[in-house]
Length: 449
Image 1 (cartoon, rainbow, N blue to C red):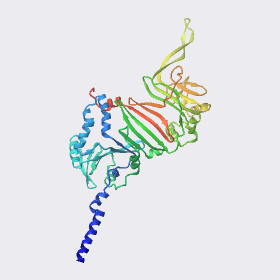
Image 2: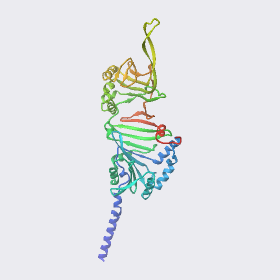
Image 3: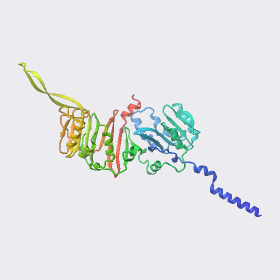
C-alpha cells in the first residue's frame, strides 16, 4: 500500500513539474520575435503599404502611368495574401550609407503562411530571374543583375539589395529573443504612423561628424508632389533664431535657384562647432572662403536668385572719322545679356573688411568696370550701411519683405524646395518638397509617351 501511495505521489509531483516547466514550449519560448530580427542600420523606418498605395493611386492616375491598376490597394492586398505575406501589418525598411552615398537597403515583411512564399518567388522568377542557393544551410534566392536577395522564415520575409547580404542575413537568421537593436527599440516605442504612410529615422557617423544626432522623416503626398516633413536633431542647443520677416526675391519664370533666409546668427560666432558653421566650412574650404570673417560681418538675412537672362547697358568709346577725316572719340552704349544673378546680404559695419578679404583671396575681383565672384557673370556692387548687393541687372532691384525661409534649387529640370518652418531648443522643423512631373516623365513611361 505504501509503495502504491509513493508511486502515486511521485507521479503527481512529476505531472506538476511538467505543467510548470512545460518542456514542449521551451524551444518556442527561446525563438526570436519578428522585431528581434530587424537588422540594425543607419536609416530605419516603417510604412503602411496599403495606405501608401492608396495615397499614391491618385498620383498614378494623374500622370497616366501604365499598369496603374497593379498599384492599387486591392491588387496589392490580394497578391500578398496569395503569397502568404501580411501587408495589413507595417513593412519595416532599412538602409546604410557611407560619406552620404547609399550602400544597401532592404525591407522586412510579416508572413502569415510561409508555405505560400515559394509559389510567389517562382512566379516572380518568371519575370525577373532568381536562382536559389544555400547560406547557413538555408535556401535563399538571388538575382545577380540587380543584387537583390530574398530570404524568409516562419513569420518573416526579407528583401535585400546590396553587397552585404550574408552579414545582414546572419543578423536576421540568428537573432535572439528580446535582443532587438536599441536603435529599433527606440524608434518603435516613439514613432507612430498617425497621419503618414511612411516614417523613418536617420542616424549615422556622417551626421554625428556635424554634431547632428538624428533626422526624423514623415512622408505625405498629393497627386503631383511628395513632401518630406523632417525634424533635424542636433546634439547641442541651436545657436540661431528665426526672424519674423526679411528681404526676399520672388520666383520668376526661369529661376533655377532661389534662397530667402532671415535669421539672427549672432550666436554662431561663439559656437564654432555648431552644425551650420561646420557645414559652411566644409563647403567653403574648396575655395578658401573666409567663413569666420563672413560671420563677423553678416547679419543673418540672405536673398539670392539665379536663372533666366538679364540685360545691362555698357558704355564704351569708339574712335570714328568725322567729315573732315579727323579721328574723334564717340561715346556709345551696347546692351549685354547675362545670366540672371542677384545676391542681397544684410551686413553690419564690419563688411568692408570682409570684402577686402574676398579681394585678397581672389574670390571677388574687378577685371573691368564690374565685379566677379569667382566665375560669375559681371556684377554691379551696391553698398549701404546695412547691406550689400551684387547683381547682373543694370539697376539695383530692392528685395521685397516676406516671412518665408526657403531654398529652391533645380536638379535635372526638377525644382526641389526646402522650407525651414520653425526651431526648437535643439531641433530644426523643416519640409522638403519634390514635384513629380519631371521625374515621372524622365523615369516612368506614361500613356502619353
